[in-house]
Image (cartoon, rainbow over all chains, first blue to last red; front, side, top):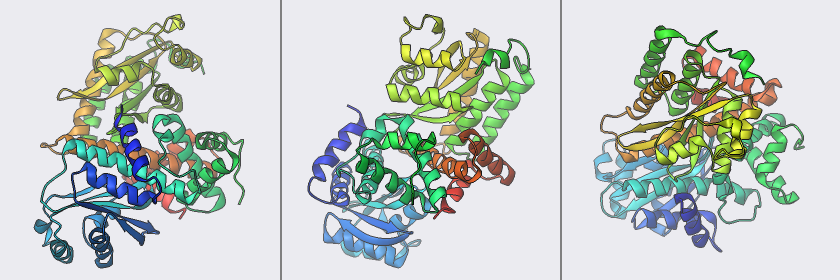
Length: 227
Length: 245
């Protein structure tokens, strides 16, 4: 079984009955052998909410964005994962963060942006009580978690069927067309690409179509989404 | 599309001679040293093999962290679609090459019914190609992806050796960001490349609508802008998408 389907199954179980973000945080913590994890959801680059496996994770993540420093803030700004195997060693670069993390008993923090191309939806941060870098396998697992989570969060906004989407990982052809279609819709309707992607998904669910087929129709010019 | 007409054997760029091949090596090495992202590197590889070898189109596929195949760079929309077809069907020479780590050559497309991948073979012939080859992008005992070559007819051993050498140079450039590069960093780099590819597709969509042009023309605009301003393709694409917010 590929890493994609194995992790999609884990996420589906974890997210049954709870918001996607909460399930994602729990699975990510488990995969990296960490005590806790949290997700900061962002709107226009500003934190719109924090969800975590516990209050410690939520408080630290909220503090990070409030102070404007730390691995999650850096991961969001760069759009790339930021690994911090030893938080104490970052005291010079991020004094406020290092102090807050130490007070919370956090020794290592690894942050992963939740992205779909140029769309940045938030940051996943995994927190450990002991210093240490992730194993290569654990690291790869969490990259897949972050990808699936980003798509699941878009689905949530589009009033989709909920749960964790896996269809996009098996249809490379379709994924590309959906992303291109989102760019076309965004330009035509003067909206953001994230909102365009939400509309494409929403249209698919409302009409009972596959997201990939809606994307293909748009790129072929046979479907135009109206305002 | 008739690629035979565009690529009559032995004319135009085939063979381009040593100077062209050396220039291609130099360009790939320079791009790697300058920290070009994987989408940029693999797109350049595709463009170089088409320019210096009797190859009509080329594409690159990589294995992502989840074990799924992803299309990264291609020299044309035709090559891109044929690579995507292999991902969708999970069948084709590039997919086999990624999985087994060995080159796939001498594919008899004229015997489509007997070919290991009948649907892919039919699509290749529909695009006007007569032969397909897949060469591994491998280093340190790991296969990271494969280079797909589409040509009017089967390529000889000398041509394939040059293509493999260019593929090797690209693989080294992909992995050379850090001499101590470990598995985590390779995973991170390839993952970033997949995200970059998604960004480029979003930007292609924005420009298609803005300029009422084809996907190829939109990609051309992004590449021209990147070349003119000395920026990475993915940065230009991200800017085009951000303007939409």
